[in-house]
Length: 107
Image 1: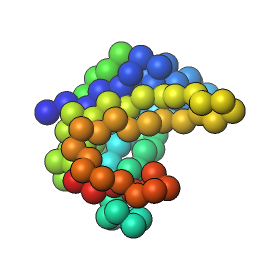
Image 2: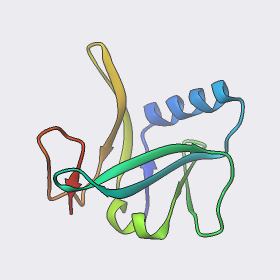
Image 3: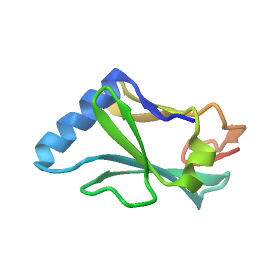
Image 4: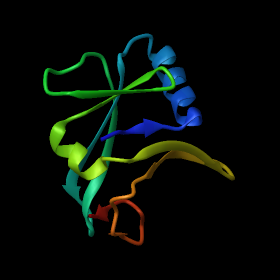
């Protein structure tokens, strides 16, 4: 089981953490939402919780709860720029389909 960051994503996370002036890493998860059933969550965290599973990728800690790991195992988080838009992109091999707006998915 593993969650990874691309080098671009790790660099962007480090930049955000430096700008915040604190933080231990990035928490990834899933929640029930949207027309396809699940949506990704992403937040910067200042402390590790006892139940967190921690992965290291390019020197950045990625924290995830055990329930979310079931849906995100094998996922790579990338940071992409397309024209004037930029943002994190989840490359999740478990996704069976997603909604047209790209905000939710189904496994």
